[in-house]
Length: 100
Image 1 (cartoon, rainbow, N blue to C red):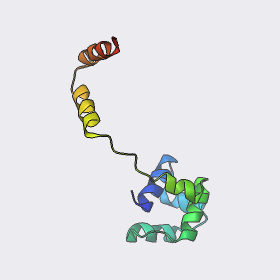
Image 2: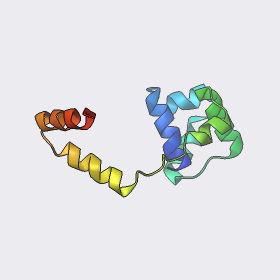
Image 3: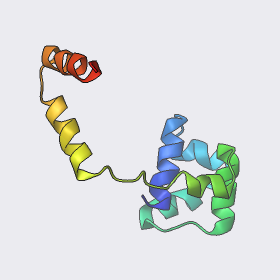
Image 4: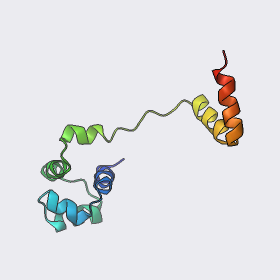
């Protein structure tokens, strides 16, 4: 995930437009519009202002960008197999697995 994608994720979660974010971060609309149009990474001062608007620190911002670890192949295959079952078969499998 890029920095701009993460900013968008946080912005959209709050229901803000780019203009709302600019106002909350006390930045000009052109500053944010330029970032988006050029797909550029913001200066640290701009990112600090954006984080302030979100009520988070820079550390919290970057921790939120970490990708979750990928599931092992066997676990993914198991999920896919269970998802392909009908609801009644999923319940039956669950009953079977709960038996000792």
